[in-house]
Amino acid sequence: MKTFKLENEPKIKSGFKTPENYFDDFSEKVLQQLNEKEVKVIPFFKRKKTLWTAAAAVVGFALLIPVINNYRANSNDLDEATLENYLSYHSNISQYDLIQKLDDSDIEKLGNDVTLEDETLEDILATSPNIEHLISEQN
Amino acid sequence: MIDEKEFIKQLLTPETQNVAFQKLLSDYQRPLYSHIRNIVLNHDDADDVLQNTFVKVFQNLKNFKGESKLFSWMYRIATNEALTFLSQKAKLSGISSEDLQNKTIDGLKADLYFDGDEIQIKLQKAIVTLPEKQQLVFKMKYFEELKYEEIADILGTSVGALKASYHHAVKKIELYVTSN
Image (cartoon, each protein chain N blue to C red):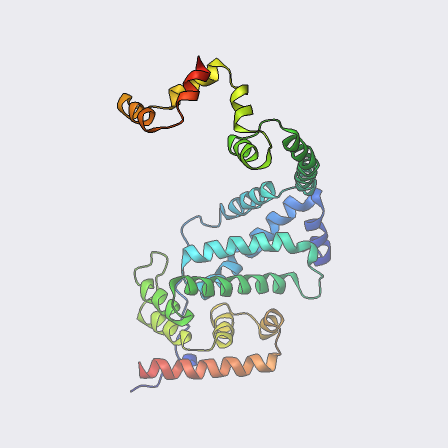
C-alpha cells in the first residue's frame, strides 16, 4: 500500500463553500440581531418600579390584616350551630322561657318543618300520658 | 490602515460606532467564517455561530483590554463559540462530539455547500480521530494557513508546543489515510 504523505500531495482544500451573496447581507443580519437584543433589555429603573409596586402591595395587605380581623370579631352574624350550642349548654334559660319567646309566626314555621302523618299524630296523642294538661293550657 | 487602538476607540464611541463596526464586520467576516466552518463543518451552523460571535464581540468590546490583538481576541471568541455549539449540539442529540462530527461528515456528500471529493472526506474523517487541541491546530495551520505566532496568540500556547501538536496531528492523519 502506498504511504500517504501530506507534504507530497497537492494542497487539499477544505471544500467548504458559502451560498451566493452570503456575505453581502451578513452585516445587515448581525446589526438587526444587535438591535433586537437592545430592545429586549429591561431598563433597571423599570424593574425597580415593579419591585416598589410589589413591595407597596405587600405592605398595604399587611396593614389590612388587623382591620379584617377586627371586623370579623365585631360581626353580629352568629351562625345557627353556635347559637344552638350556646342555648343548650351555656344558658340558664329553660325550655319554658324559650316557648314564651315564640310568637305565632314562629309556631307556624315549626309546624311547617314537622311533617307528621295524621295516623302518627293520633298514635302519639293516644300513647302520651301527659297530654291533657297541654290541651287545657291551649284552651 | 488606522492604528488598532484608534479603531477600538471608534468602536466604543457612540458617534463612530456604527461605521467602525461595519468595517470590523467586512474585514473579519470571511476569515472568521472559514475558521468556524472548519470546526462545525456545516454552513447553517457556521452561520449561527458567526452571528453569535459578532454579537458577543460587540457586547464585550468595552471589556477588551488590548492585551492581545483584536484579531486574536475575535478568533478566540469564535473558537469558544464554535466548540460550545458543538458540545451543546452533541448533548442535545445524546451522542458524543466525535460521533456528531462523523455524522456531519457523512452528510457532507449531500451538502449543497461542499464541493470536496473522496480525499477531502477522508481527511475530515482523519481529523475527527485527533484530540480537540490537535484538530484546532491542524485546521488553523493547514486550511486557514495562519502563522504559528498567530495561532499561539489565539490559543494561548507556545509556538514550540504548537509545532509539536501539528507534527503529531500530521503523523496520525497520514497513518489514518494510508490504512483506510
